[in-house]
Length: 311
Image 1: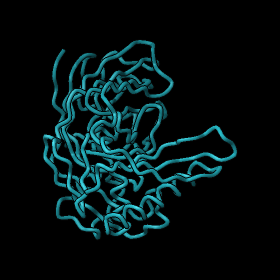
Image 2 (image 1 turned 60 degrees about the vertical axis):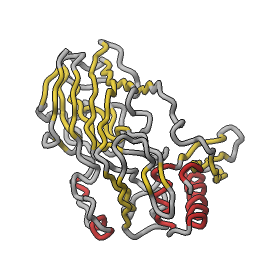
Image 3 (image 1 turned 30 degrees about the vertical axis):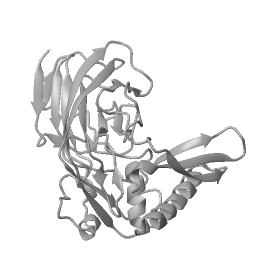
Image 4 (image 1 turned 180 degrees about the vertical axis):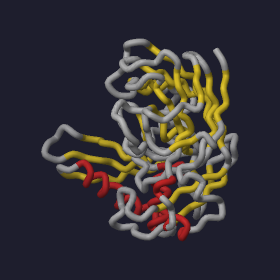
C-alpha cells in the first residue's frame, strides 16, 4: 500500500470517461485530496451578496481528480474508506437565485460567512446568538459513468456525484458500482455541516483536505451506492431535541416546501432575524424527514430543527 497527495490544481468539472487520470493507484492505496469550495474559488471571506449574484455556474462544484484505480473494471465495486478530513476554518452559505427549495420565495442573493475552530469542538457562530455544531462530510464523490461525453456532477447518479449526504463522513465507507475501466474517481464539495435536504441549495461550504483509502471488490457492484456509517449520526446536534414543523398532503415535494416554509418563519421570529437568514440556517442544520408514507392519500414531511442551535 502506498500514500499519495493530489493537489487542488488537479480538478475538473463534470464526469467524462475520456478524461486522462492525474494519478494512478493500486487497490489499498491511500490518497489525500486537496479540494476547492463549491464556488470553485469564486467566493472568499470578503464576498458579498452581489458576488453570489455574479457566480459563473460553469465553475462550480469542482472535483479533484480523476484517479485511476488499477484493475478496476465494469461490474466491480469501488470501496471508498473516508479516513480523515482536515477543515479550513472558513465557509459560506448562500441563497442563490433560482436555486433551493424556496426559490419562489427568496429571489435575491444572500450570503453568510462562517468562521469556525478547525478542531470542531466549538459550534460555528451564526447571527443572534445561534450556533451550529459541526460534522464535516464530502458532498461530491464518485467516478466516471459509462455513457460518453461530459456530464455534470450536480445530479447524483448510481456512480455518485453531488450526493450531499451527511453520512459520507470520517469513519464511513461508500461502495460504488464501477462502470469504466480504472473508475476515474474524484471528490470535492466538502461541507462543515448540513441538514438533510440542504434546503437552500448550499450548506456550510468549506474547502478541506480529505484522506481516503480505495479498495476493489471484483464482480460485486451494487445497484446504487451503499454507505456504511458506523458513527452516531446526530449525537453532536440532538442533545436538546427538536422543533418540528409539518407539511401534509399527497405530494411529498409540496409537503417538504410547506414544512420548511413554516420552519423558516418560526426561526426568523424566534431569533428576530430576516427570513432569508433563517432559510440559510435551516440549510446548515435542519433535517427534512418523511415521517409518514403509509396513510394514503396524504403523507407527512417534517422539518426537524435542532434546539441546540438556538441561544
